[in-house]
Image 1 (cartoon, rainbow, N blue to C red):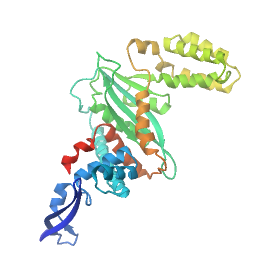
Image 2 (cartoon, rainbow, N blue to C red):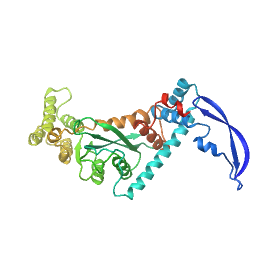
Image 3 (cartoon, helix red, strand yellow):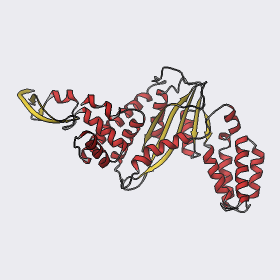
Image 4 (tube, helix red, strand yellow):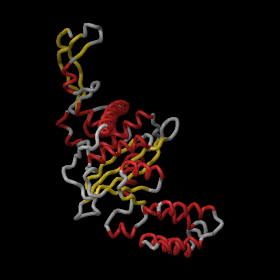
Length: 353
């Protein structure tokens, strides 16, 4: 590199525009100029690292337009919506690349080092999915959450870790497995898998956690009971209310024979009755709710559904959003990082200006 002297450039920081004078060099092969100090500062375009943190935080919480407006309102620094999008997608892509490297590294290991020093008493792994409005067609974003509970407080989750990816189930299984490993899956005394009954969820869980206890979300089971009730009674008929509540109680208390007999009250020739019954018969090994409650296990996947709402509904499906795949995957990772505590509140980011 040939030194060509000091040159000035404008940098947009959290304190406003700053003019820097730094050494610049020219590549003898004609590949352009280079300023090492820019790399040391971590600049992306004209944006300082502090501004990049703000822009990621804003993009994770709101639309790009809303994020740009929030930055200007609370700091006085002007950043366009397109700049917020560009910076957030760039960093989201880097996060995705980091995860892919971790996945590749995990393929060559028998065990994975845990981030948590303490061995979890119970480690829960829950999975669900929600669709993202991509172009040209909607794609399913698979969402997972990993959390532990202690022996003293078995129904109080400790630090949820969210995982998400718009990808085939085989790739998502590897991604989720890496994060579960970081939370101590290898050393956990017990692993519990939560799901809503979708076959791909149980197939994936059986592949990566073959010795785990699988639990069908009780509230999804209740939704299927409600659909079965409508085969004979409307929502307004008291007899239907009684049947539905009785079936829920039988299922929760483990009265399987009485639960089976309850279906005899539905129209025998209905195709819906066979479909409803197949759902419960298929998932019977995952519906030992009396045992689960006695062991003080979670029987609902509300934490997982909340993750879907937090990641997909509240960010990816905002009004007017239509994503290209690369941008959608990048912003999903930005949103996941935000929910996992990867960004400090803006009031604490000022020091990174």
